[in-house]
Amino acid sequence: MTEFQPRVFSGVQPTGNLHLGNYLGAIVNFVALQQSHDCIYCVVDMHAITVWQDPKELSRQIREVTAAFVAAGIDPVKHIVFNQSQVSAHAELAWIFNCVARIGWMNRMTQFKDKAGKDKENASLGLLAYPSLMAADILAYKATHVPVGEDQKQHLELTRDIAQKFNNDYAESIAEHGFGDAFFPLTEPLITGPATRIMSLRDGTKKMSKSDPSDYSRINLTDDAEAIATKIRKAKTDADALPGETDGLKGRPEADNLVGIYAALSGLSKQDVLNQFGGQQFSAFKPALADLAVEKLGPIGAEMRRLMADPGHIDQILANGALRADAIARPILDGVKDVVGFIRRK
Image (tube, rainbow, N blue to C red):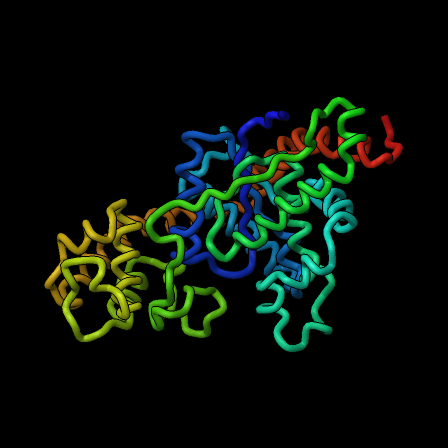
């Protein structure tokens, strides 16, 4: 049985302001995983252009995501931080995977249906095929684990399907070239933390989103202390006191969301939070949540703003990361080309 070196890969799209949901649902886990895994973190700018992006704004947003990674505690020296378009192996492997994946697989992707809407005939080919590029992002490094939110589990399952089909389709060639019984691992999801889904501050039934027209629906990582406190103070709630048990949060989406945010920011369970605040009104809970959010997020926002003031430094982080990422991906891509039967420059 082929054994693969444990490696974590994950990416974040540079498409608008990063918010509390991105931080608690993804970035905080990225930081924690550094302690136990070799990690590769990518700003997936090629995914971003599946829908049109203003070029100047895209450049700014690539740097902003990079700044958020570093400000939140990701170490770009011990681990790898880069933007996808600087490593050509992603695009090259994606084309090979386009020829492995089936159109029916792509048509079943719920995110394509959501993003394309009713006018899917007018959607870009990239939007349809981007799960194949996502598989290439992961498998270009033979990553064994990917931290994902619930909404990305389907794409990771597709990555596993593509890896399995490649391994099966080219089994004889894989063995002939000395790669054992499988070229690619079947990547496992890492879903961690008590608050992998952070909901809107204005509607607890909807996911916190950078596309929501109301800025009061989300806490942006670049918000200052006053903005953070104001948004929490104005967050939608109900009239009842907080319950003493987590079962009491059922049917109360806004209360459940705010308790979940407090739990995630403090590293406690929801029950721990209710043990402290159960029976109290939101007029008492919201100030405590605001103070905690400012304490945790304020320094990240300040460091992001400092880093963004020096774009040359961010660009150097990305360039250095891309060189290191390419050094891992290039031999793997060369192996894929050998297995497929391409003649490559030696």
